[in-house]
Image (cartoon, rainbow, N blue to C red; front, top):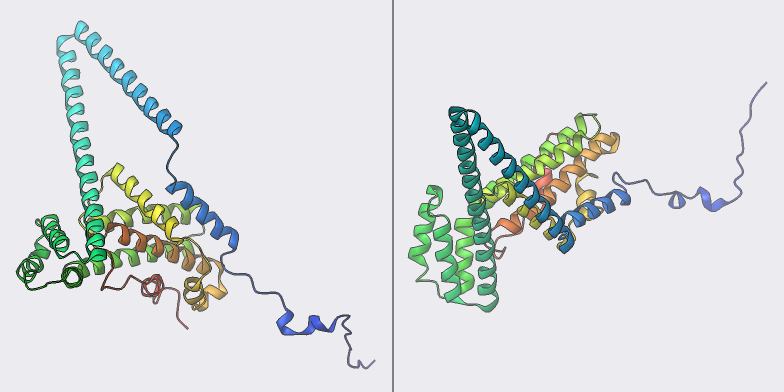
Length: 329
């Protein structure tokens, strides 16, 4: 039996138009973008006074109980055996000394981070008021900050020689930015690219649940700490947490945790494999979010605000980080 052409009759002719077709869903939906914003907002939010009192009292109570238990243990051991009690006493004293050294290092780390923040605010004020005296004070503070770093010795000497010839704050701070800070910016951007590449690769290749989350968390924390070290702000354990909170606060304040702008369109949309594989697309997006955190860390840790130098482009960082990794058009 011969078959003739089949006529399909549409009830509504408007449905047959291509422009009436539903939009293709994005790689990362709005709900995931909102989740990222909520996570950053919760991490950056200052705890309430009641929460601070709770943790302070809890730490004080635990420390009191632990010290009292150690005292009872050592005194009881001394009553049983003078030798064993002496060994326990020496071990406790050594432990206390180590804790004091750790506390001093944490205080020094907080001090270096505070110095970076102070210099950045002084430079911003000098630029806003065109204050040449304030700009020279910033140059002197930078010289003290990097006095122990041999890789900046010749640049600092040049700044010291030339600052008397520059009679405006913009020119002096611009010279410091393009000569002293520019090499540090390049090193910091390489750290961002390495972290974005790692997060994107693990997300795309490893199918284990929560592996990408763990990798993103550890890579971002390590990246923030290394960026601080590049600019001279060595952070300890507590200092790293304080620095991470500052970076997340900066992200929330600038609205940089939103997903869906030209970043995803130019990076994720420009990769062929991101259109074919969902995992590769998620890898590109997670790498882009890591790059955003890195740029925020650079802005927070950089001793000078961006003036003559251009702020790092997240899209350019991700493209360099993922070149040859997920393929190109």
